[in-house]
Image (cartoon, rainbow, N blue to C red; front, side):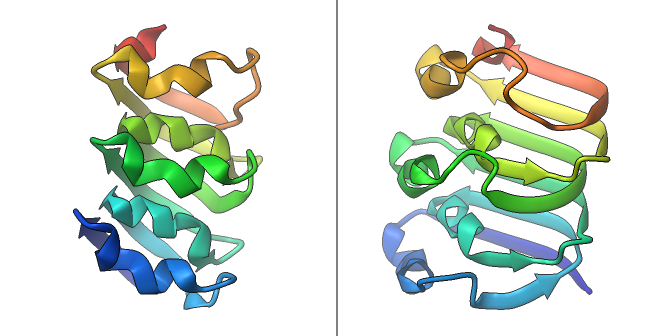
Length: 150
């Protein structure tokens, strides 16, 4: 069991080798983990992670202060990045746009969902989606900050 994976990448070169892989061979089936914290270009490795089908993440944090940090994630199909069950999910700035790409367990019961987008430009695509088109499961506490309220 991997307790935590924390990766902050300010330059695409920091994750270039990982992004070159064709499939989910990177960190081959990292299995179950408690905390995943990806920031900057590190968010782009999300589709490359082989996450265990019974994964139950205590906390998933994604932060992207620039649009370029999530270019590849936005190309992914909606609901294509398996995350399993998530107790606390926090997406900040441009990373909020990754929410539709995440595939969350159908029986998920989230303690807290935090979406924070300082400027509305951070969430242009998600605002254009149909209502009820994003599945996160049951949520006990929802925190929407600034433009994420729209």
